[in-house]
Structure formats: structure tokens, C-alpha cells
Length: 164
Image (cartoon, rainbow, N blue to C red; front, side, top):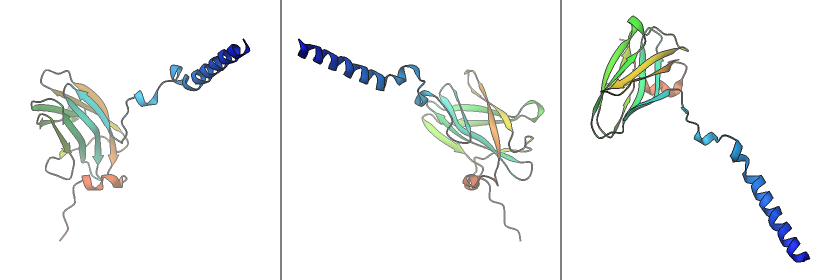
């Protein structure tokens, strides 16, 4: 009888320890399930098209550059409309992205998306609206960063022409 009681007590104790050490996930939210942007930019998804790490780099003058990676998860190409800013200051770009491809737009190459003039100062956010075809568009607030402050973006900005 005593052996059976000890065995039962051992099983109950083991179950209590196991439940006590693993049940914290029953009530606590899991941080790994929260979606967030792990960089300076922001992201959005419209249908098959995803924008990743969108941000605006402002130079020392009144010009800015939209830096963004566009991912087309569909099999057909899409003409994606991107509107930056609001009201009369809105600037629009049409980006053609091939099916199943990833295209990065930076300020340092021929695919640059130049905002001239840039009405928002560094430290502000600027509205960006993205849409294609019959898909419902999405608006996100994109941060405006000063290019001289963030050295990691130095290779993504235009190189000034040398003076004579």
C-alpha cells in the first residue's frame, strides 16, 4: 500500500513540476508571434506585392530618396503605383516588378526614386500609398532619415560629382 502511495505521489509531483515549468506560455503572449520591422524602415503588403524596409533618406538640400525593396510573390509582373507625400506635394512612381522577383530601389543606382523637393525634414514621417491593379491599396508612414547621420546608408546614396 505504501509503495503505491509513494508511486502516486511521485507521479503527481512530477506532473506538477512539469506543468509549473512549462505553463508560462499558456497566459503570456509569445514575442515570436508579433510582427515587427527589424530595421529603420517600415513594411506593407498589397496582394502579391510586399514592400520591405521603406524609408526616405534626406540629403542636406531639399532632395530625398525613397529606399525600398519590392517583392512580387506572384507569377505575373505587376505595375505598382507608389505615391509619396500628400496633397499638392505628392509624388508618384510606377514600378514594374517581374513575377517571382525582388527589386531593390536605392539612391545610388539608375533605379533611384528621387523626391524633389522633399517637404518633410529629417526625423518626420511621410505618408506612402502603394497599390496595383484591382488590389486595395495600403498607406503607411515612412520615416525620413538624414543621410549624413546614418553611415550604414552611405553606399545607398548618390555620389557627388567631383569638383574641378
